[in-house]
Length: 84
Image 1 (tube, rainbow, N blue to C red):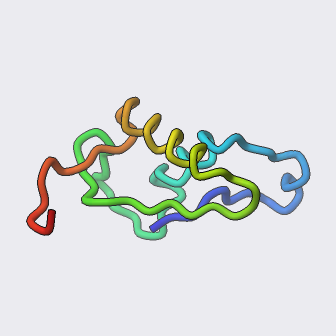
Image 2 (image 1 turned 30 degrees about the vertical axis):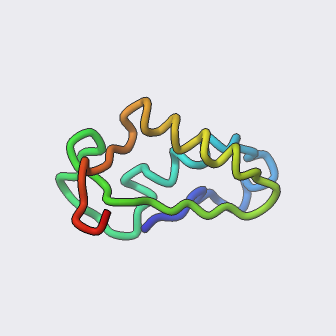
């Protein structure tokens, strides 16, 4: 589980990320709530992810951002899981 962006109050007025950048920040190790010392985004795999946005973010933008993460090997998924 993670949360992004984590920024200082003083920078909130000037920080305006795109959906893709915001989504990528969610999967950065420093923004995760649990610290895994040997975490490697290319080697470690996810069974599933769920990304929730606040504000005016279209589903198409969110899906495109997650597909960009997968294409650029920022996240990878298991090939098979027993539940389908």
